[in-house]
Image (cartoon, rainbow, N blue to C red; front, top):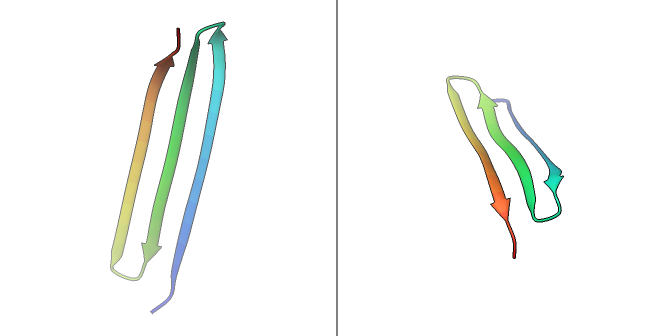
Length: 45
């Protein structure tokens, strides 16, 4: 069977101490799909 693994990530600083992030990972194949999506806010101090 054929399958593909895909993924991407992005982040953006919205303040001096905060950033938004997004990450997607997926495996797509005949009869099987797996998807993971992480979205969040990260604060530092």
